[in-house]
Image (cartoon, rainbow, N blue to C red; front, side, top):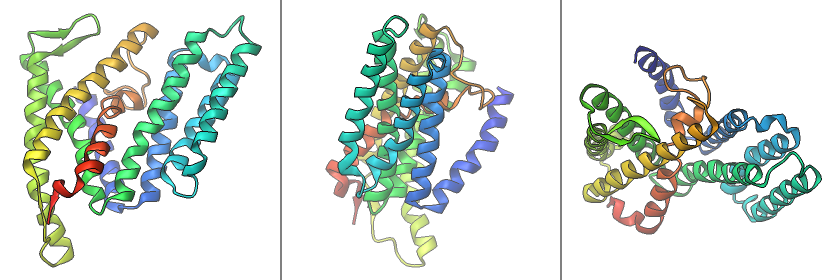
Amino acid sequence: MIKRILTAVVAIPIVILILWLNNTIVMLAAMTVVSVLAVGEVLLATKYFSNRSIAIVCMAFVAVSPSFLSLDILYPFFPLIAATFLLLMFLILLSDHEHVKFEEMSLMAFVSFLVPISLSTIVLMHKNFEHGIFYVVITLLIPWISDAGAYFIGSFFGKHKMAVKISPKKSWEGFFGGLVTAIVSSLIVGFGYPWVVELFSGSPAGFTVNILLLLFIAVVGTILGVIGDFSASLLKRQCMVKDFGSILPGHGGILDRFDSVLFVAPFCYIVFKIIEPVVIIV
């Protein structure tokens, strides 16, 4: 637990700095680095880095995908990049079919699509919405704060296990503790954001946050975060590894920290895209 807290003390200021800079290119660079590191961890965990061709093709695709998904000038070419990636993966399978299994290629293709596409929605939120930084904060806050709440509540009060065979430490007490933590934190951010805007702009914010919608996002986001966490735990069990990496002591690897974000980010982007005028009430 001490390692987990110390890592958070170091990592949180970095996240705050990226958010404070409030720059789409910085956000894009950050999500690109996270995507590359996360997929690289899966390649190492599954031992697929031993196949140099798969590693090179996957890492190259993951490295360019966020830019092609987020930048208007490149976006029309993403289908071509994706098709080229899949074609190369099948060519590797055909040329080395005695050593490369179809399920291995399928897993890496899936992960190479899922991670950058999911995290690119965070960049799109920041880029396309007037209050993009608020949406990014909410998207990251809900899975991370609910995970932290679940960890601490579950550590002290967890008795009823959720899925012992997938993640034996997760409990229903921890889940509901994380849910309450996410709801309370979302309320604080929702009520506080107009005040922060007013403080920095020197003029009335001119809007309020739809708290009911924010509560809905917090509840669904917490559930999706748990699903993402369980999905990563199942993959780790099948790969017979405890964590995907060790870059974050007490937390594991980059993917161990972002697994709960992978399903939450697309959900939030869709919600904000469809009913954005309802989120911020002018």
